[in-house]
Length: 238
Image (cartoon, rainbow, N blue to C red):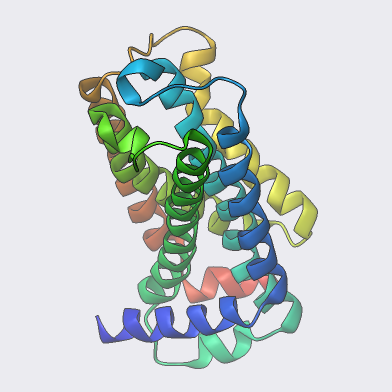
């Protein structure tokens, strides 16, 4: 765990020192926090608004998560590829699993925080617009709580693993960002093809979170298994 903590400390310093990533985080949170709250559809609270309306507004926070993860996860790898600092990192005593897990976890945390902050911005603007007593809006419904606290968390890990994988193979920043964004569409395919009919209930969201959790576990185990110094050196410098 000490090795993982070391990687997380290193990645956090690099994230905070990257003005572009911080700027993307702030702009994304602001946009996806304010836009849905400025909707012309008004309601007095969760019950009056309807579950469907609240869930679709809440999805803006998930969109913020996807955008931030698509930017941050590849960038944590690409900056080291461009700066050739992987030589130093691979020369350390840090185990392979800690290097891979540290980058994925840092990106996942940043992405998940972006979803939470955008939600708080959205709730604040909605309360200011309503002019009524303070309400927690989406969090007043069980589906909303499950979506933001469970589904968003596993989605953050999923996007971060995809972005980290992509950055090992693609050196071009724009291409890596685009491919990572497309990874989010894989999750939507069953719904687009009507294989699954969403009911917007807490039980349905729990099932979705459970499926995504299994996918996350498989991807993490696969990533840890495939992330080896000898293979990485051949991929990056071969």
